[in-house]
Length: 332
Ligand code: EPU
Image (cartoon, rainbow, N blue to C red):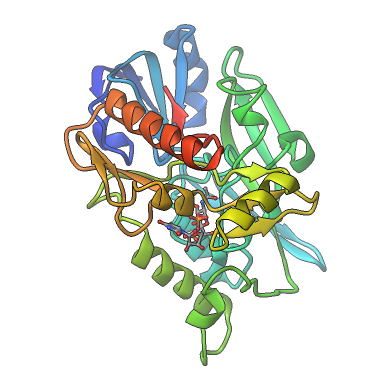
């Protein structure tokens, strides 16, 4: 197996920052993993589609690009289909394939960039559905000794854009396969934003929901192939009920999403827009003109440019609203 030294990471992540890896190895066959781990040394980072990543200009150690492929129906019972996919499968292609097979459930998650293996790490979500809603289990290898472990949903400890793989287990595992449970009793989920309105008049099928989600995303979110970005750059902040009420009293237009525990999720995009950052640039980076929550690279940026803009946006939102935004991507 060969590795590339001083590899260009710009084409391997969607923010297209100036970034190089000391060593890049590609994993297309699990049988090669033991050799690869033996050669990699202690600093090993796993790369999927690179759609939620801010790499430094020089990334030390080995970057392991996962290109494991394969997807299949593993079984079914009265209630559900059980569908497995390898970590290197493209997420959107996988979703479209499940729909074409007649196994709905993932349609609201159409067009999210990235790979199947990265999807559980931040429990990807959109339009009222999160990965955890259709998740059954995943298989992973420990990076230190290559041993195999199966994680149930409970063990993954999924939260809003969060899992155990972003916390205590961060950097320790290579996810190889994800198993989904897609219930046979399909119920469309249309309550988020203008999704129902988009479908107005059309027959509501899983593919029609997918098409509506795709249309909404295309109208709001920049295509990374044209305008490099990492999707939402900040989490929508969750604040205690009292703080939410006080903010709402002062800013009646603030979008608020009450949570089950009484707290409230605020729309970070709105806060950033009100703080004056929508469409505004700092050096080669800026907040996107159609969706202020998305940080875009206008060309030639490195991680330091991203960090500078992040700090400026956070400082202004904190000063204006008393809310500290937290970045969504992983930093290397
Ligand atoms: N808003 C503004 N100005 C903006 C952007 C948004 O006022 O510049 C307002 C909107 O008008 C709306 C609210 O904020 O009232 C929410 O906006 P939107 O529906 O566009 O969703 P979001 O909260 O900004 C979240 C996810 C997206 C996901 C959409 C749809 C996070 C951090 N982001 O964005 O996920 O696609 O909802 O479900 O939770 C991602 O994580 O990378 C991502 C794109």
